[in-house]
Amino acid sequence: MRQPGRAARLSVGVIIAALALAFTSAAGAERYLVVYKGEDVPRGASAPIERAGGQLVRSYNAIGVAVADSLNPAFAAILAGDNKVDGVSPLSGLNFGLEQDSTDWEGELPNAPATDTDTFSALQWNMRQIHAPEAHAVTGGSPAVVVGLLDSGIDFTHPDLAQNMDFADSASCVSGVPDTTPASYQDDNGHGTHNAGSVAAASNGIGIVGVAPNVKIASIKVAQPSGLITPAAVVCGFMWAATHNIDVTNNSYTVDVGATTSVDPLDFFCHDNPVQQPLIKAVKRAVRFALRNGVSVVASAGNSNIDLAHPALGNDCVRLPSELPGVIAVSATALSGQKASYSNYGVGVIDVAAPGGDAVPAPPAGFVLSTWPAAIQVPRLLQDTNAPGPAYYRFMAGTSMAAAHASGVAALIISRYGDLKSGDASMRPGRVQAYMQQTATEVACPPDPTACQGGEGANGFYGHGIVDALSAITHSP
Image 1 (cartoon, one colour):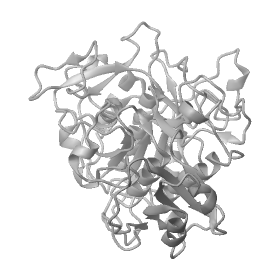
Image 2: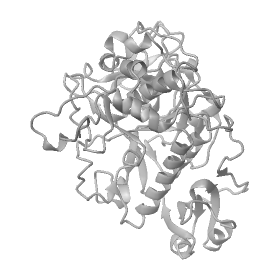
Image 3: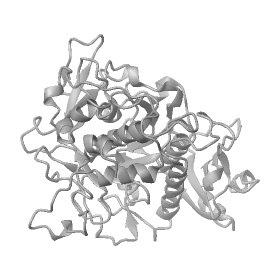
Image 4: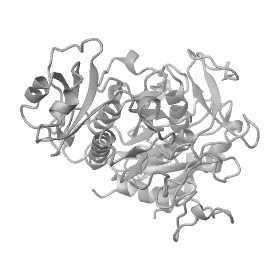
């Protein structure tokens, strides 16, 4: 993932301009994203922010985005009068929500095979659907590859995840500013731990086995305990991934404009909305920066069973981040291999499909089993009593789970075909996407839904097909 000359930590060229402000937000202050017309934050940006009654909290110079707090209800209107400012948007009521869901040379990264004989492996239909056990006979992935989960955190004490945790590249971005204290990126929702297991649960004789059981995982926490995620947290998360040791980001969430400001229950952000447009631009810039810095970005398509190619509000409205350029958008399949009943779809939007589970056959048989935090007790958990510590597992379904499987396949591709030219795992995101698309198992549209019909080699339900872990690492496109 590294560009030549990039160090594995914050270094020369790092664009997060951490301003050393001894400032604590006053109680009740509103947080804003300030998007500038140019893709850099102007010098002296703090002065007009202060004149408008605010305080600069964080500056992301390379993408022209700043985070500011203010108690002044007229702050946005005053600052928007600055001719260098493209838009100012408050973050309250505008959130993301978790889905409930150079040249590359083969063989340069350290790889080792893995087995699929853990306690609950027989329940993992999802891994068999994408031929993960056969792929593991070749490689379980490389520990030089890191998948960052922009999610609710990861329970890094879980016996199936602990050995693969990358603490050095983990952080909480919930506030919009990175916090590297381990307690800050511990999971307090469960969603992130479940997805982490699908990506990289270790092949260690207990519980389950992930798609890439030898790779490392980093917790990039962006979700509040309720599952809500502010745009500032997402921008922070992508900037963190771009400037740290991250090869793939898994993004199992979508925009939730829900609670207070939206008349749209399907969670679209619209360019013609003056509050939402700057937020679209800020997230788009952060994703683009991550892609330019070698991060492959995988995202869930959403769980509303809607045609993203023809949204009710028109094509000026998008779901984030799955509809942004360069993002690998993933729809969900059921145990049958057909599109899950809830999964979003769309010709030209969906890149690939992956197992997400569905209610047929009756749960839990058709759901995806993965890791779960011991501290969050919910009904019908499985426990592996042979584990060295509390090891719980839960069945869930959603495009969140599908994205996690695709992220695992991306990690296997980089493990197999990436290089170490810059001292770190490296593979261009466009190349990773091409490998995934061109080695996926094509699935034909059902005879009835015309919205599924697409061009040659891709359709609206499955994109280029269901990801195939074995084909991805054994058949070069």
